[in-house]
Image (cartoon, rainbow, N blue to C red; front, side):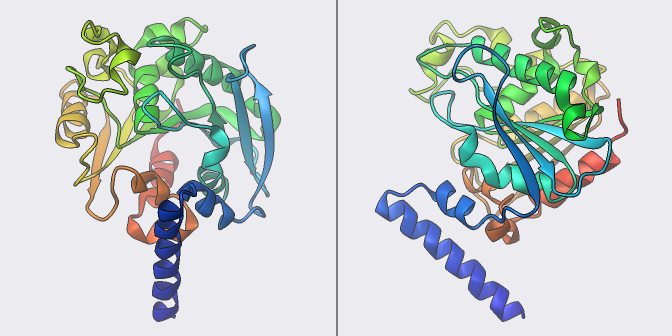
Length: 291
């Protein structure tokens, strides 16, 4: 049995490598290997007027009333990304009894900071107002993101002005989860990111670490220990240390096998052997008290 699992894992990794070499998107491979019998999906729900202001909702096939809810934001340096590419994330959460909301948001060059964060706030407000229609409990609401999406989740959880603009407060969140997030990245080194934050005049208030305060929602921060794109020591460790310093419950975890990119891919069924990220996320949600 163990040999069979190892062979399947090796085959999946080989398929992903082949996809990269052939120019095919690895996420398409992951989504092709993702079962569709664990959830019901409603796609293309508008939370605003712009074509990018849409979201998909993944509901467990056998939902429990008052299920916890996760709003997920994908990465892509605020330059790229599409919610349908992360169907494997929606399936992973729904398969564990969690209602998942995957939201698109406007990207550069259409918008710059902080407008994509305003989109995120509107997606969260839509979720708070409507998720009971999808068996979700708005009192058990979590934010989650990977890479630049983890930044979005962090800012919404830590800067009260963002959710305040849509009539909400971070205190209405039960917690948030960041995967390989950039939380303290000035001065900006990535040339793709510089114009998003008006480099070289990037505002200090754009950094999540500058919004840490007592009373912020609990956090689970996960990073690849050998991440070469987002320094886990400065970003994940630094934010965790500052949150602890003001008494905010936080857990930070580091895994050696995934990279910056494959950390989120460990949520997919084929790559869960790389690291127990999904188990940690589900455990955090189950053991974090409702707000």
